[in-house]
Length: 94
Image (cartoon, rainbow, N blue to C red; front, side):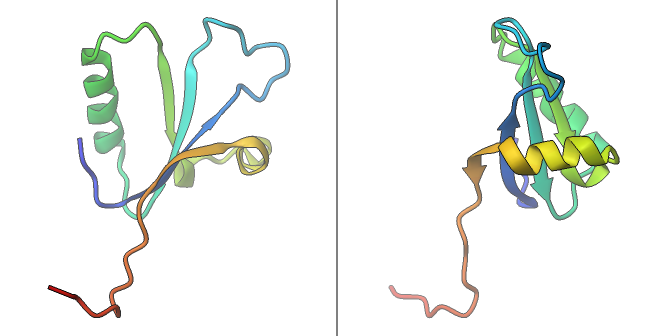
């Protein structure tokens, strides 16, 4: 699934100490412009269809209202995908 509105994706460990185990879910948070729950559900279905040996907990950053979790993601979240910066003022070369 491609979504031009995704800016970056971060992985973070479960912020409650002691709950992150070998078989725990992969916690991801998506940052972007206009991301919806419909998009999130489609993404989760596509990931599920991959039959990976992991479960994924995916959230849209703008929808998180738990300030402790927001602070935790900002502090320890690791960016593993970032949309390349595109300067709209740059001259195109052929």
